[in-house]
Length: 503
Image (cartoon, rainbow, N blue to C red; front, side, top):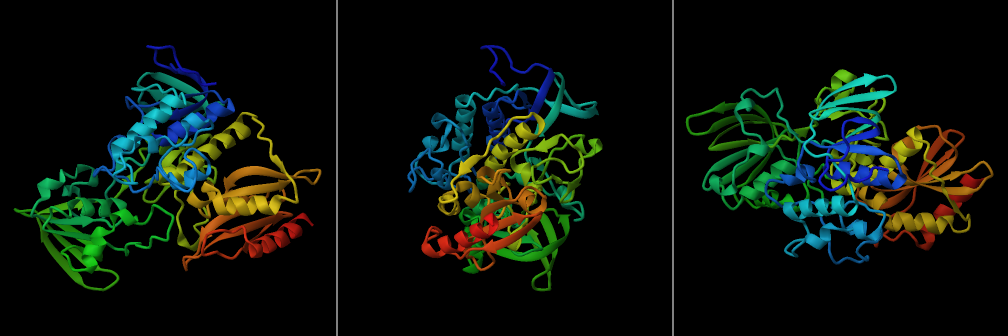
């Protein structure tokens, strides 16, 4: 196991390890803690000097968009409580669970950035996640039997490398003339310095709305623009859309309060003596716009700092900002290279009804990290993860309870699923949480998987997938206004499907 170093010594000196994890943000901490529980020896290295990753700096305006409810319908620290705590990492033992709530001051159920950072540091300490800090990953090459990672401290050799370096590299599109002169989101100044100024924000996703929300008390006018309409619906369980906490600028736009939210493609940005001139073309409604503003901010997102991984063969997409991944978060073109944390949104899943996964945020990718650790342990290191036998008479109740309460299924809708399989002797085994796309696409043993999904009308319901003889069929159960799928009609529907599968 990955033991802690004696006091005063840095752990994990350069050398050979079965697995090397790069990073010390929440993705790296989750995978390390999960591998440790499974007995898989590994090293964790990070260029930072303490845990936290991107939460040591972002969000700029110091308040998260993912909630943690200290007082909730479920007991703090229970599995059910994870549904109400989107920010704590997952621990096997009670002292490691639901840590972020203990650092919140009660002024909001959205933690502040410092509260989140303290929660992550407490997890690293309580879960005994050792990290070699101040060790910068500098290069990668393939060797017989694995990979070699060059670092500022020396060389690490491993069979498996997990890169949990976050989507932390500021990114701006290259096809807008003049955008090179525009400060990026990370360069946004203190909000008070924008007092009585007109500000143009390029981008209408989370960072764009965050900037606009932070500047509302100070700026004379804020304009947000991007080609596609803002996805305002709070029905979505994906962090790809602007979350409810950032929607005051949109409300200000609707009520005519001075903010403008436009669907427009930015055609050119020009520096002027007093600020910027932005020329844009309407998309939803055709038209030409020109704005003279004091400040312009490119809230255009981030990319993954991949170093030389593309030269190693790692394929990317999304304008080079994300590595393409299998359902188990392995590079599709570079075997043995895995990803964790927010980068796992590069494994896009089924995207049913157009909904993205929640893998961009902690409440989604923490579950990916647990499943990834189990996959690495069983696939590469022979760790047997025995399925739990399920009595056929209780299988319906078990699956409906999962559909109603399981945080993995609710926080990663249409992305993660609870799987049952048939063993060689016909017994039903609960084989845990799996990526739904893998279950649907791969020809595996006969099985049944249950996921939760929200359709394009806003109806939330369980989805049941039956795999028999290499073929997978989908069946949708009905929704419920109280989100309780343990009722008689759901029981009858699922019992019929279970009987069909077992036959």
